[in-house]
Length: 436
Image (cartoon, rainbow, N blue to C red; front, side, top):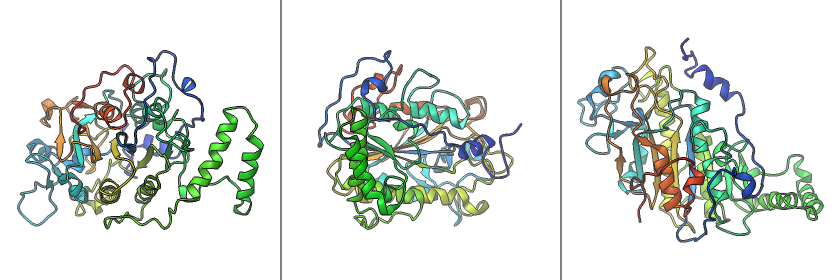
């Protein structure tokens, strides 16, 4: 049975979207977060001048990386996509064209707002990357990436949660170290101490009437102050987090360097991220989702194709990231900031019969920051799109493990050498992703 549907996304993803697969993690100690079989943890120390805040973005739905970053130098890209391919930068005519990044790859027009970050050397594009596991299930593939190890039920928490669990806080008394813009804590941050799901930090409070919110917060702090840990510590962190977020002017936040965030869920999440980072309250890890990328039908990678649905999504993504680059990464903050952007898998190299693409393998990922060795497209050798070079005759091969990017950033930008804990049973292969 085909996994296509008239709504454009596969049945599995529509079912997942209607359910909450986000896991909750309590504020427990490091020893409870990490399985006993993992190697010994050495607590990473903090230094404001050498350790970045990390912003993790997950593009859920399985994004078509070859529409975001076009391999126009490979003629088989055009052979396999006669209806949805994006024209070369030097193509004749006035229609939409790729924006050249080098002599082989180019941004789709929808990604063009990121050109300033790229030309400034702050944005790295990694192509033909992804998970070493070949699952085409949205749920499984996403979980394996968020956990940091494919197909291992023993592992606890997520890769970013384990980073926080094995590193000293940037600020010892900070009540909030990790935050996700979700209704439940995502797997990526699961197990992270002092990490909370907060969909909108501007109105984070204890549930109930606004008229009694202050009184209920005071009751919570007073009645649990004498409780044993971790109950007392968690109650105090909860009330302190509410008080801390209420002191930040999220609604009136003014971006710097002329940055304008899109008035979309993702755009406003990055705007709130900027406000939180600039408030200098000790936040260390922020996670956000950007969805809607399951494009089986009428993909529309440019505005002139099928209404340009994917083009519109790309513009929202790229404009939000471009605003964050201008506002935070080019601006002055107390800490450095690194952004990582990844999806669960790519799409087929060849279009399907509905001018869309089905679940595939190799994909594109991004890293952005002042200490990212950007302004280039990183590959571990382009595998090629000729049918004989495709995985199972249909997919771009994965030649670059996404953990190569994550691990180098964790060690070199987050100051955490516990890679065997954060990414178990994985041997890091650094790819010159970060600057000295």
